[in-house]
Image (cartoon, rainbow over all chains, first blue to last red; front, side, top):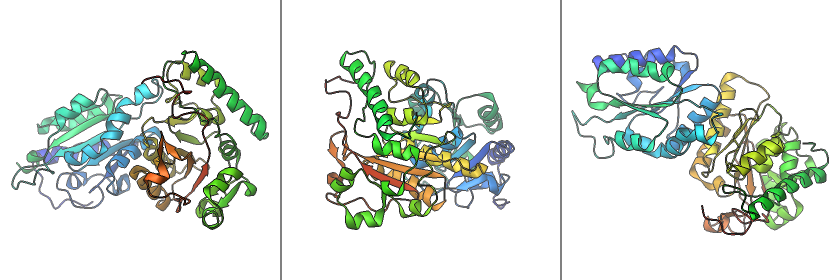
Length: 185
Length: 248
């Protein structure tokens, strides 16, 4: 397992437990950037307990990634589609808002692709990452998404229950948002 | 639908479209409809399985034919990789999945969706979205929304080790120029995903001339990705509807 070199605070520790819990389900598959290769303190390190064979490192193609996630879901998987920053998730808005969110209506209730999306509002300390790496569009996505559940994870204690709900407690897709600053507390 | 008699199969498709067109004329269809009259022969051949006389390999086509000639002869241009595979004459099988655009009546019928079911979908305003788990049929009304989903489905098939099941991703000429298409088809080709792309080229996206705006006028589109094919046809109908303006 990789990523153990990073010291975990409670938030990260709970996130790591949540990812491990998701990985125990045979239907899940983790895909995105810095999933199988190091690069993001937010995502890669918290996947340390996810077997490498369940992780698929993708090229940068955010909207296509979301489309691939939908296709995988239609094929019977529960993709955990990871975007290291919420700024980057904007590029996947077509597949997220126009497709995944509308699939129930598009298919007249006949198809129910379920995707668990994980993204991060970038941390603003210890360094300010600039205006393209720490935007918080949580409320905008809440307004745009009628069928995808949007959950902002501020409290470490909420993390595992929120992901458990996303996996087992709902038929809907979920967008779960890390608080980047909490990774550094 | 029996595809052994091309003319008979073609007529069945046209009869269905004509019936829907008449309903549109009478204002009975409660949603936008995109017809494809003129796009019968090659589609039927693709679903049946294309024979050597139906296609040319892309490099050969580039050297030999103009698009007008290809269109006139009803020829399908196939990628070199598809040509070298054993898939050209395979056709679409019941276990396969279709991912298509908002103009998909023909594909639905050829995949085996009962005409009465498709007609019901169309009449209730769902012409663009006759998605069906039973018939393995997915569409999108956003260009090219279904293409990455098709690649993802194919990825799932490969990962599960499912054999002899393919995804067929149909799209128009403008869709084939988009970033999402290029990303999806490149990823699929390099990872050897079980997906065949079919570009149905009617030369326009709504009314925008695709080749002209992409600076490709006069040239056959080159470099078909992975397992893919392309053919040309002329649509009898406008982009949407039957010619009478309906706002939507």
